[in-house]
Image (tube, rainbow, N blue to C red):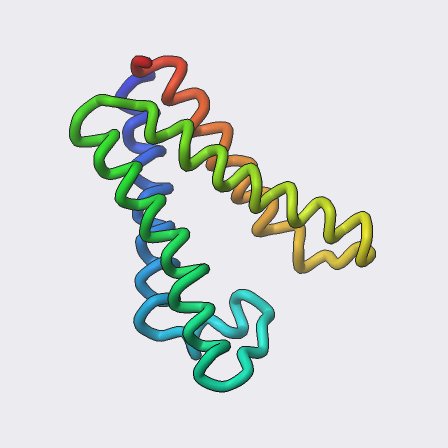
Amino acid sequence: MNLTLQILVGLATMMLLGLGTMSMFAPRRMVKNFALEPVGTAGLSTIRSVIGGLFLASVAMLSFALATGQTLGYVAVALLLASVALGRVVGLVTDGFDKAVVPPLLVELVIIAVLTAAYLHLGR
């Protein structure tokens, strides 16, 4: 069970690393993924900084937790992703249903569950 959770956390970390790296260094390639239309340089900067920065900070916390066994980083990233998921739910309620929102929401909820389980089972 412990090895499985570590592998799942590692997979989530790699996924976030890919999203963060692409957002930071190739924001134009991420525009379609995020359903955004950045306005000029400032818009691209927002994708790099806010989205890329969020993902890469999450990767740093998860990497530190994986390397040291100090699993509180799992909770921090789970809380960040819970805030993102909450924003999606608020959007579904206030803006209307869009099936394109469901897959990323499900991925976020799965990662939250994995990180929470890993925190509870691997240490505190």
